[in-house]
Amino acid sequence: QVMLVESGGGLVQAGGSLRLSCTASIRTFRTRCMGWFRQPPGKEREFVAALNWSGDTTVYSDSVKGRFTISRDNAQKTVYLHMNSLKPEDTTVYYCAAAAGPYCDRAPSTYDLWGQGTQVTVSS
Image (cartoon, rainbow, N blue to C red; front, side, top):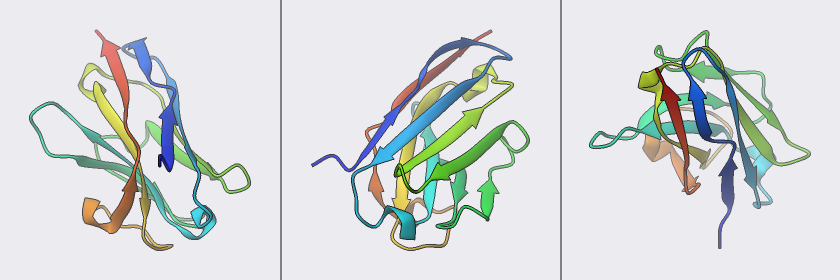
């Protein structure tokens, strides 16, 4: 049973923008912190951004701060990642994740539900 489904990935030129979406089919969506991670080939999964249950507290990695924005629509059970000023080094698979509770952490172990991933490719 797929509980988190990402969409919105694709190919974009450096400096461009993309918006990733993650729609959840879980009843507890509005009580959970939601996050985005990415995993470059041969590397560990790395934290990108997270947003607490109410949407008023965000956390970003230093590599995306000021360029990416995370947001959520609890009525639609959807979390978004707005990516601006994209760089070739942002190229990888992006994963949506749901934490076990309302508050966020950068550690992947905090999250117990994961999407299947969506590919983002930024050309130079």
